[in-house]
Amino acid sequence: MSPGRRRFEVDDHEAYGRPKRRTRPRTKLRPRYEDAVRGVVVAVDRGRYTCRVATDGGDATTAPPADDDARSVVAVRARSLGRHAIVVGDRVRLTGDVSGRPGTLARIVEVDERTTVLRRTADDDDPVERVIVANADQLVIVTALAEPPPRPRLIDRCLVAAYDAGLDPLLCLTKADLAAPDELLEIYRPLGVPYVVTRYDDDLVTPLRDRLADRVSVLVGHSGVGKSTLVNALVPSAQRATGEVSETTGRGRHTSTQAVMLPLPFGGWIVDTPGIRSFGLAHVAPEDLIRAFPDLEGIIEDCPRGCTHARTEPECALDEAVAAGTVDPARLDSYRRLLDSRERRAGD
Ligand SMILES: Nc1nc2c(ncn2[C@@H]2O[C@H](COP(=O)(O)OP(=O)(O)OP(=O)(O)O)[C@@H](O)[C@H]2O)c(=O)[nH]1
Ligand SMILES: [Zn+2]
Image 1 (cartoon, protein in one colour):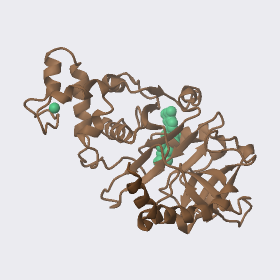
Image 2: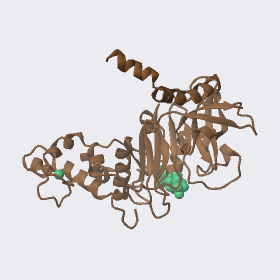
Image 3: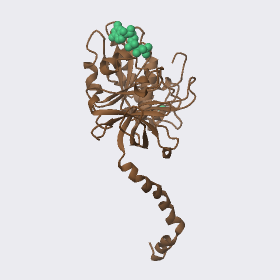
Image 4: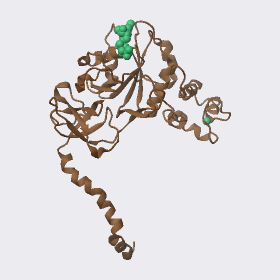
């Protein structure tokens, strides 16, 4: 760079002034953030955010503390955060009255960047796309083996949502006292989806413990599959209808469709999502889904332009790979079944 050019830059008030203006508000706010405590949002209700904060000033977000080591703090959001939504699972910084005493209010001044977002897209009941949970690791798809009978299409749609959100799926097959899991498991074998099988006349926690420990797991499932039974077994202090938010906000009884995040006694968190049975998947493209199939991802590079990899595509490289014996036909079948499940049908 010539000296002349350098001088030009230094003298250029316009160019020099801009970054300064951008940093000024931040330095002004910094002193407030310094005494901010860290927390994780566990419930959201009409502009009030219930956050869990470690009592020792530690980080309640990375090492979820046991009941005795954490307190619940109700907070509002700082104006400076704009309209950006804050959801269950968000890791935040809080200032103001963070004592958690009844009637006090803290203020969320910062929201950490999210590692994952689980969203539901527009559907008939809810025209707005919403993030429902932030920073989850795992989507636990709770399905009864009988009463109600399993609905593989619904499971498929949940799997697509998990893959799209970057969450590891886990199949939790309940009511094993009523039916055997083999037939259902056969459907998911080519996908390699991990699973646990539970029954309520047996220990419910042990099969799930290793899968849930130290992770943030979101539970989804159709009504009646035994989700509340599982939640109550996993979090004994949650012995109430899990759809109520009155506990955390003190705002009277009403059934919520909001997610609620509960700390597990053995480490980690579960997020119960009453009212969320399935997901709008309109936003999921074939390219998004194939990322969950690393063995197929390389093959589609040989597809003709615009190939959707659907069954009806005449020259899809995935069919050629099956013909050549390099891809298991059941695996391709499963991928295409998931692709198809993105279309909403009656009963989804
Ligand atoms: N046979 C059998 N029944 C079970 C099992 N787990 C739960 N149930 C029963 O199934 C019914 C539904 O269980 P819940 O835990 O309320 O199911 P849920 O998924 O929370 O359903 P909603 O409350 O409607 O959302 C209850 O009568 C439970 O007692 C199981 O392992 N075996
Ligand atoms: Zn193709």
